Image 1 (cartoon, one colour):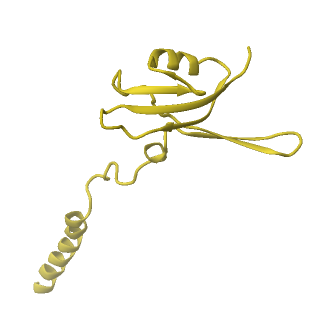
Image 2: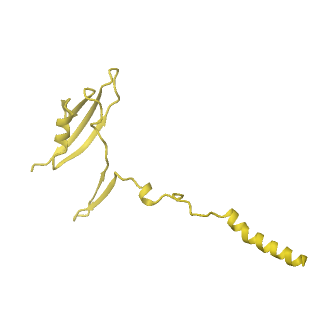
Image 3: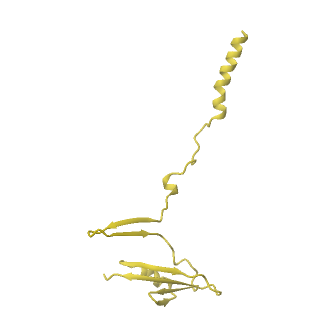
Length: 123
């Protein structure tokens, strides 16, 4: 009789231990998905021309117009402008591609210079 009680107790204990230490529900978000870790604003395009030369274009998002008005001087192909709306319109035209740009550190007055070199293809 003692063996039956001990066996029943042991079987009951073995049956309860996994439930006590296991997870009831799978943890959500334990491992991030691909969509959660990939960069959303960057895309890379590779082109191979017929002559075999490769051209790699990287598109990235950078907002050059989120500085307070009056604190930025834009230099477009060597010509200064303080009008961010004009610069945005000029650079968003179809066929315009940025060659290079540089953003300077703010000076003592809090003003900075953004120098932009671009190419505009005739339409």
